[in-house]
Length: 453
Picture 1: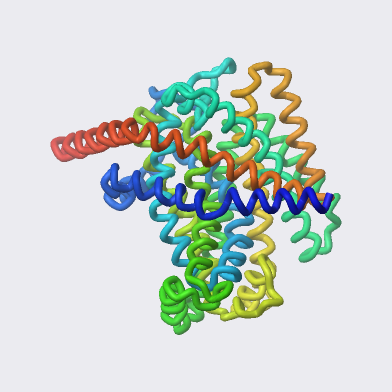
Picture 2: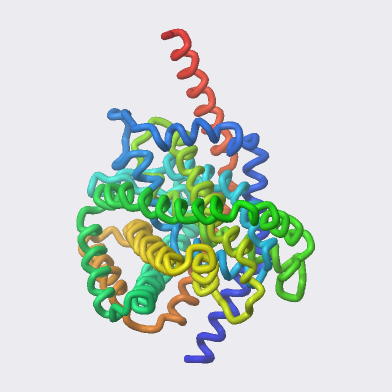
């Protein structure tokens, strides 16, 4: 088993190495140019859509813009926002935070493109629900069904690890260490919670996540803001360190700038999943008249996830200066940084944040995995089997060590990106066409408002 785990680790390092990271960021840069830096030009309008109730009752879809965003946010805001960021700073130095921001900026264009294609090529399944995502735009848009099948296989498998077992394991571990609750009790509670949400399908998932996600995000963000306000004198130096280290490799592994770039980009992508093809599966379920409208909403996910939530973790760690302490790793570093500024409340905030973040990831990924499985196997009975297996994995993950499962799922997660990025690049002309449509529609709506006034 040790040899197998080592082999998986080597494969994972290779898949998540420079070629994939360059392809991920490169695709984001390419799309940013093709859509004219839309993530800046239309960001105010996109945020308005997020926080405005969708009154569209005539368009196709299962859930609102906000519920689709919340489902995607639920899946992406996970352990990566606390553990992943800390690991990036440990291995890449403070400069890794800058490169997380860098990849997130272009990742917004990638996420936008994914959502446009997801809505454009979505279909109505046998249950009368929307089904979309990379497998559908690879088959119906790019006309490459073999790539669609590959993506669906990778996604269905990855859901059990990255989106399930490893998350429940993180929750059970932090609850045990912080509140002395046995892992099996946490496992039972998480399993029941997941089963109840899954029974209601995407509408139930949308309702739960639209309540769950804003609450958990605000909880963590407010804690970070309190730290910033109480320690304002440390902020300029922290940002100065982040920007200088980004181009010098200060405090990175071997003092190399390459380490800051690699770990910053890798953990940023791991956190927001831009380019991996998971989030557009949720975007496809949104009630919307034009693909571009939901795409603008989906684009903000990267802003909230990486540029805001991950920054809370990263800047707090840099402000604390504890990233140079080699005895602190992952969640322990984030916990120590929060404890330094907030005393005994710090570890509790990090623990509760991890519980909410990881639990929500299970809910979001349950939908992703199910849709991938549904694409591969149309038999409703098999879908029931998949759901039962997914729910059972929540308990297994909470009670046993899952190092091999984590690594294997990490490999599957990375492999999802390759067919998805091929689809994005091959269908970039469709993304540009739909972008022109939504821009024209927005202009038409604004003109109508002016004439109405």
